[in-house]
Amino acid sequence: MSELRQDPVSGVTTVLEPERAGRPRDFVRMADELTDPGDCPFCAGHEDRTPPARLELPLPGEASWTVRVFENLYPALTAGPDEEWPRELDAPWPYRGTTGFGVHEVIVESPRHDDTLASYTPEHATLLVDAWALRIRGWREDGRFPCVLIFRNFGRAAGASMSHPHSQLIALPRVPEALVHELGNFSQEATERGRCLLCAVLSADDAGGRIVFDDGVTVVHSPWAAPSPYFMRISPRGCSASLADATAAERASLGRALVASARALHGAFGDVAFNLVVHDAPYSAQHAGLPFHWHIEVLPRTSDQAGFEWGSGVYTNVVDPDVAAAALRTGLALE
Image (cartoon, rainbow, N blue to C red; front, top):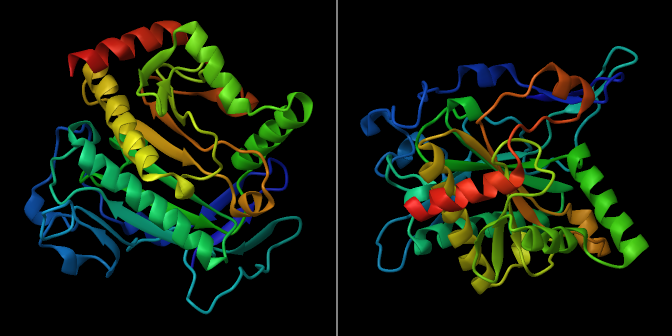
């Protein structure tokens, strides 16, 4: 079983999982270096090479699945059905740690090996969003985990080990510091000014012309204080704490926005590596009605963060977000 170890000096939590070093790695350099689909466990017809499906969603009229969810064969965190909480480790003072209690799922986004997020139809992208929402809702109903994190790695530079299009979900035994910090920011803005922080950010980016895509329901924008070149945030216009509670129309709009963000990157840079992370309110915050506005962050790997960023927590961006928004709009128009 994996372990969660916390460093008392930095406060950083590390998942120790040596067994994951043996997981498959077929993503060598770039997105166009695809493996033989005959060897890929995620391709249609190879379902016996993965754990049993926890969710399968087909497109209308299709006889087989389009999106498929199952437990990661090499999970970072695990929890048996009878486990209710993590166990404390016998850690040497002053260290602390617990067993790696959690869930790690793979969301295979397409039965086709050479699909990309930029190539999805609106219906296909909506089905992916439906799967994300259903899994967030399912683990909320399970009640054992404080929050879930959904993320997508594309390209080796972004940490992807398999080239077949997929995203991942991890249910965590504690709320990560990044989400705790965001919750504090939302609460402070609500207390001091009586408004939603992200709604205010959207208004500022609307006025500043930093919008990449907007269908009136979901916005892809280049934030004024973007932490890295060509960083994008995908935000619903409606203020809601969780993607799990999005309406069908909102999920369809998010699907269009996801495809638009991927096409903007592809049009501007080709098959650039990127990370995508869903920021959903912790379950306890949802139950308590704390202010939060769910959103997605898209981080293209167009530059490397180094010692200054790691040591200070302050990020360096060499591209003005206004310029980035214009370049991404051009990229989207070219697709």
